[in-house]
Image (tube, rainbow, N blue to C red; front, side, top):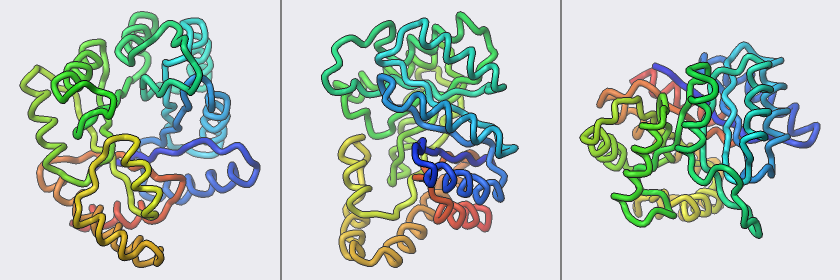
Length: 275
């Protein structure tokens, strides 16, 4: 079974030290890699590179930067790719990214498939490229058909695998995989897993990204809203069962949105292994 964890960059000294400690704690479960997010239009791109460098220097685990294309020119992307190559980075997660407020010029790339194509054309197969998938439809897609069409375009451009937005309904994941397989998609589609630790944060994220929270889960989270310990324990149980269901149906690769925390992700991974 393969495991990976996503981090977001830290800018304060304390935050950077805390993230390095979290990475060491998560290293115990021998993840395939750590990924580092990147803000759109350069909002955290410098912090992303700094975080990637720091993790690379303090871990033996592979590092995979996110690369968002909105607001970036071909020259900027080329310079960044050269920097990552100099660090020995060989995996990237390629995303369109959100258009920052007030920005009208998206520069040279308007969709992730264009960036995938650009990297493949200019760097052959040096980089392993992951792209995003949305089992419950991207919130800005016209409809499900259009969303799947956009995903297939990223695969045709040369993506090596995909990582999904998080979900809590396994049927959405299996249905998506079946639908794109009928269109000739054969690359691995790795489920993105979001541990549950905060009611308000999770509902805000889910509203923004279009991830559905089943009503029965939502009602329990409301019940535990002011009791973080019980909420987290409930979240571990729910997400562990989700992963166990995925595993029992042949899934052997999980990508965790860690929120820069080692627990409860480690508990969930252990529960998957015990299944």
